Image (cartoon, rainbow, N blue to C red; front, top):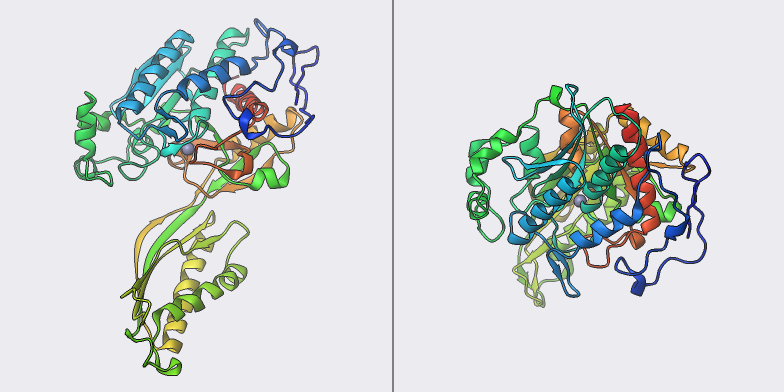
Length: 453
Ligand SMILES: [Zn+2]
């Protein structure tokens, strides 16, 4: 694999030569882009990404909270997470920015002075347990590299730049704490009540790191304080790879509803109960599962998803007809009307099945998160930037939640994806080719320049 530049310093389209890296050459393996072909971009009018520097930073940050063979563990507000934040602040300072930690534990690096509202780039550097090297980290460190590239070039930005690493994006304490504090959605009551699955309170976790929990309220920014927000993230899914594209421009982030559904029949002896006289709750679930494709066909869009992810049969005995089934049902779509139609259809179909099978149907809605569209101008700037680099970007929804979905409530916000090898993420095998990392950062930089010129 190789990239090259023409004499005016523009990045030429990439071509693949050879196969994808083997597992041994994963992200700690050799760099696949020869350094020698990169010319120095210093003092050029067109800022350009230094992939060697970006890669070195990714690998350094990847050492913090790294478990041998088990991936990363940097849960929000743990020692590892805070060590990563301190490292990031030093990295920002040594890259010519000014780093600070806001009241919510968000790391914010600022480059360039000026009265104008800044353009913000960022993502998160906390991880799930056993997470990979690229999730979140890429958007933050590519942001730092973009700021550095601009600072080193002769290009004079009309706006300051901020790079943000939002706190607890992975939701140890529920929601996306850092970005929600940033957009002013956190309340004192929420701060008091937030706990992790182990029962540790957010207030305690923050205090243990020397942070004052109520200071999170001071992290809120006003819409007029931010000009735009751009995020680069790995796809964490298989679509780009399957479509043979290297850049995905996200049109919107899926809304999600989450239900717990109860179907109740009658538990009874599995030997003495004739099949036609049973009131078998599992059979109700099985019928519903078969209806899911039809519901999606008739009411859904191409991006719709319906998932039964957790099932409990009661009493849970091999020799007893299950009298009750409790299962989760999660629906997703980026169109609010489609999401509503999916929910209505699920309710209708479950009622009909319950009637037919003599079951009692009930559900509780645990959450309903509205879909979030990315801003058309940000989408357009990403599409243009990718096309100018010779790419054919794919306009696509994001099925996973990201900081962008909250930033879009505050400002013009949008995001791009680069491919995840085999679609794997939230796992130690998470991998994005360094050539794709470079391209993604380059698209981010081109779009950024568009917003600050
Ligand atoms: Zn992420």
